[in-house]
Image 1 (cartoon, helix red, strand yellow):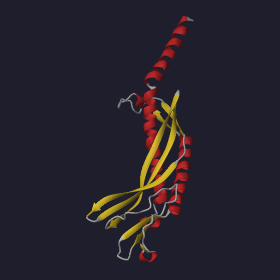
Image 2 (cartoon, one colour):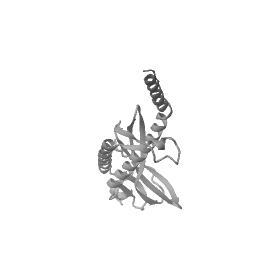
Image 3 (cartoon, rainbow, N blue to C red):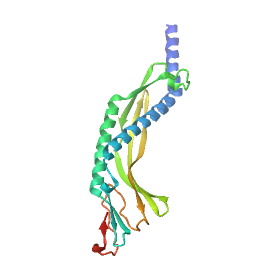
Image 4 (cartoon, rainbow, N blue to C red):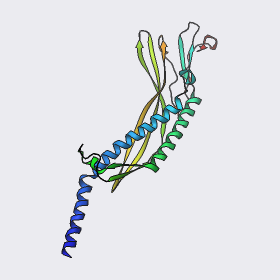
Length: 216
């Protein structure tokens, strides 16, 4: 009986040791791999949805009768549709990731290159833990003499819960993926409608007669 209690105490002590010393490492490894997997899923989903989109599909450039750009206007209907379709695609892929999960060998947790592929597998669960926010933004970057590059991006943000034996943690995933870009010749107009997939833009008063504008 005494030997039984000694074995029981030793076993409990071993598991307490594992929990204190290995669980933080397991969590760190699981979070890093989950971050990589989620980023890959988001990138692939965005590229599937934007592969056939050109700059002119979502951006209208208006010029005056002297061929100067005076207004840049995004197509908010197409942008909202793009954001919605991308969000649904990402949600579907992340839900599949939840059913699959993944595992890492126990040897990987030790940090030893020699034993990184050895030992029993530790099962890791992934659960979507928040909404998927997809927004569109843009930037202007100098591209040479009298030239400016206009880049358009999709920003995706979501949260995932990483579940390992004995505990769990939540990670935030934020990915910015380029959609399209174009070179603007000449000065960037003082007024242009900012991208925002949540709200319709407000048209500024340019004091330019409609007949003086042409659309490119």
